[in-house]
Length: 199
Image (tube, rainbow, N blue to C red; front, top):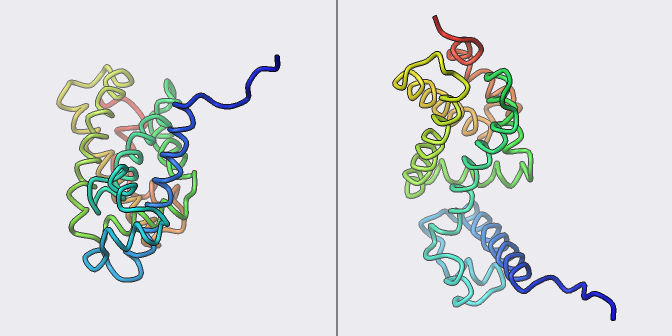
């Protein structure tokens, strides 16, 4: 008897969940851009996505939740890409990890980032996601920079995330022509600390 090619239920469910979230995310982005965050309702997002209200609430707890995936995934994706370049030159790893983290569907990522940073109701979540990335970066930097004390490592991680936050926001709103250029410029003041051990 031939082996079944039907994926396991858990895989199908996971794929459908990702697909539904992508529909919700795109619908929310369209509406937020067209009429503003405050004027957009959950009903409108569900209608635009072609799903029921019940399905919407199975995937998102609220209107804010439509972009939670971007808020959570962006920093985590950056840390994952950065770690893939280590051990190695730390400055290059930071820049390459940053560029790679936004390389998948860059136009959608640019749209979502622009909406998030320009919406006061979402900025607190944006900053909280950056703070989590900072904590994760401390662990990587401790391994890569054993010459630094604990406070110096935390300071370097905080400065790196702050610079990359400026870079991604600049790239999202079109101030910088490319993510790599934005990252290089934003990191320029702390580049010496990332590029070599501090005395």
